[in-house]
Image: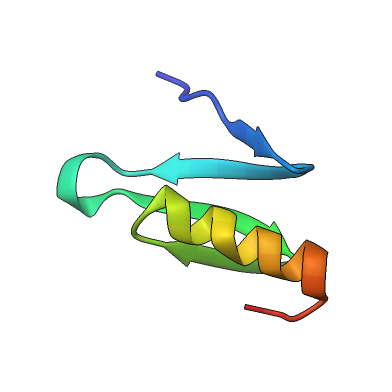
Length: 55
């Protein structure tokens, strides 16, 4: 089963795994970045776009 990917401010957020082992991944500045919660990934994308600071 292919899971749909979410698009947030031009970045694709992909959920890998399921349940407590799920991790959200994205690529920021050509580097893969992941976090346990989707909110942390979105915050990192916001910081990168708005302030130009790498998470």
